[in-house]
Length: 192
Image 1: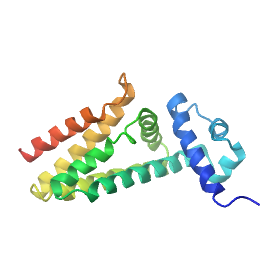
Image 2 (image 1 turned 90 degrees about the vertical axis):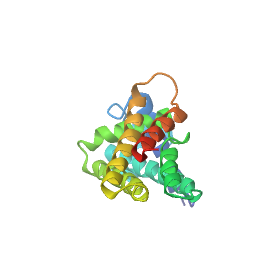
Image 3 (image 1 turned 60 degrees about the vertical axis):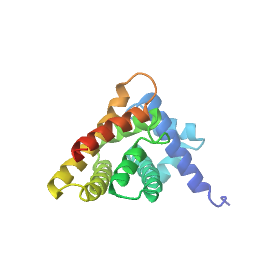
Image 4 (image 1 turned 60 degrees about the horizontal axis):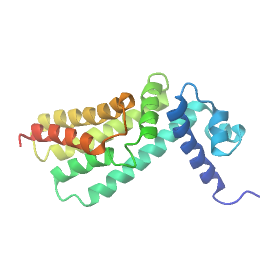
């Protein structure tokens, strides 16, 4: 009889192994059996849980989006106004538990896979719409509606661009530098 909770533990192990394998080998070179071995489970079990490598990538993306959402909510809880909420969104995107090499590699894989995988594309659209919508809502308290939307889209593009740029950068990620760059952009949009 299987132990209660084993499925969720195995799924998490497979998701963690997916991130690590993508970081080391890239998504195209990673295999389900290699990911499963790293997670300490059989390849058959990985196929049973996720159906395919694309299914495993999408489950990984959902898990990372859930983690990012949790980080954002925690930071938003202490924000007292719209400007602080904008900073909370930016800070969550570059939190040390988010902005790290293995996760950066995984996000690059998501972007690349979204070109050919409808479910991955759908998940990226959800992420992007949510980020822009949250930012636009807060910018709308500080700017006219059209300007607020443009500022939100620019802020989101800068966040995503800095993440993707890190793939090619030398040395460890610099979250403070990234936050400063995005905050400078926000300040220019607000005219402060």
